Length: 417
Ligand code: ATP
Ligand code: MG
Image 1 (cartoon, helix red, strand yellow):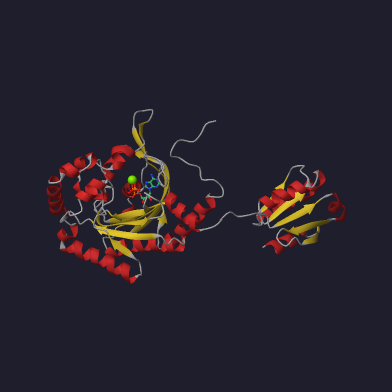
Image 2: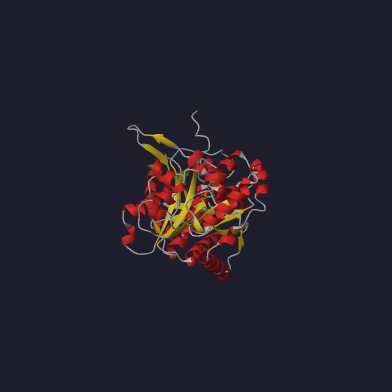
């Protein structure tokens, strides 16, 4: 038997209803805040991700599914959505339509990491991006949206962690100070961090290796290097969050794994998923649109890990499966012929209806209806056919009613709605 690829998964009926519920809750919320859906391709030129995410990041260094197609073009299965949304924004000159635009993306992403709980090679993200505003209100709005979504989904075991990475005006001085600090502790660093130390020292702050964590414990704080604008910006984000009752923690060691961030970054973290603590992450990326060839456009966004969110919500909630409202048990060909049209009409009227087309006995049909959790069963056997009257059994109360064939569909529509 051919099995699915390691790190990939099927989302089966029973679980998929939960995914639909989460997606709908997110879409309703984003819609109210003016986000428009954008559907981007699954593949892009490798160069797009290499340039935007950054050559020195985990994603580009070792996680991308990259391959030459039959003509030798180097393509990559998207590991995240932001780069493609920015590409589309520039390519279609969306900036000429309105100075501020909000987009959302829902779909699969691909990263070749070590599969484990909460970490897959094909995983899903719910993504939101805002282009054209440098305002701290937008940063705060995005964190607030995440907080609201978690509350609507009944997720309580989460905290918003926020930090600011400064801007091109103030970050270089910090980078240098951190570089000096780290060069004095080279021996303590893991091999990855030793490499990051010169190329992207901020990422050492985020390393999960205990020795590295210890080495950076006393590292200089970026907040001491903020320029005036970065300081006010971050302060305003915090004020907005507090005013909107969004609980948050300032996490000076939060840096996030992508190169394109500036100023505010944030993560929604949970303790419910073992080692995989991040349910969502995002931040401001004011330089990216210009870097990819578009006009100088400030931007900010986030991505929610759909799989991780679904795991947390599933732990908190029961069954989302929709059971049939009516199961039609027709006994024999003549009864099937008489009832088939009813099942079509009821289905078209929006009633969840199931019909058994087999020659199973009444007993085994009732068993099937029971297993499906059907609310009612409509029984039509030879005797009912003679009497031109069906039997409607309420599966919960076990009460049986007789329903004349004449006007049956209309009376069922009334009863079952
Ligand atoms: P992590 O630190 O867990 O590797 P990340 O910083 O690489 O996360 P992002 O690129 O910020 O992740 O993606 C946003 C969200 O997507 C994450 O917070 C996480 O919930 C989810 N995510 C990332 N990688 C995976 C994966 N391999 N499987 C499932 N979900 C993932
Ligand atoms: Mg990662």
